[in-house]
Length: 231
Image 1 (cartoon, rainbow, N blue to C red):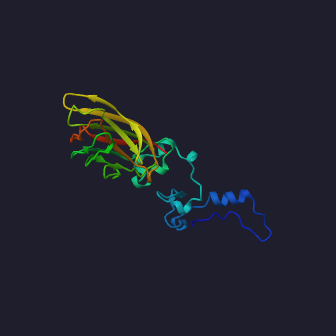
Image 2 (image 1 turned 90 degrees about the horizontal axis):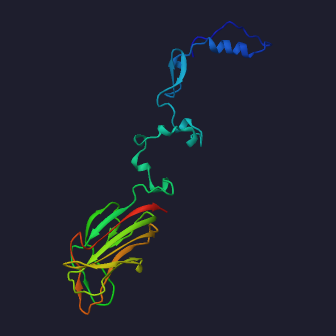
Image 3 (image 1 turned 90 degrees about the vertical axis):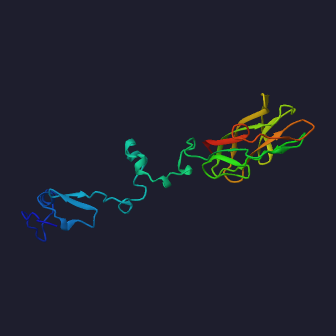
């Protein structure tokens, strides 16, 4: 361990006092032979904790608490991306929740006087691969903003409506408007989805006596959604 101060000689009946012990410790020189593994180091004869010497093995359970960490000590660079999950965020923190946008690239034929599921066969983006078969089934529970627009290929259709359906049941109905080339209905709402079985789809309705078709481009018939608040 180094050179020990020998100013005091102890006998079997001697009393060890704090003064004697302090002198022994203060006047001793610690050398590298006292270092255990890579936890400790020596600098100017003093025993120090080596850089990187404190690991989970040296810490007691529950030794590191939030109150013991300075606010600016935790930075993004010190946290692995895989260690940050939705479950570890606060209840009102969204994080990188699922988001998608899909649109019609083929026509959907809508018979009269009934709701028909709109086929959305192409995607603009789908960050968590939760959109499939014209259905959004997110794997993160929370509240989602869902937006959709359904457009017809004709202006002669009557009573056109778009509808967001959750688990097969009407959830929100849209409003309609007529432009120069089509009748368009837009719908938007916030819906809770449980992150496992809940899903949403886009349906369209018209009250004409003949079949009509949906438009087929990304700007006229589409649905999008994103997580706005975790569960």
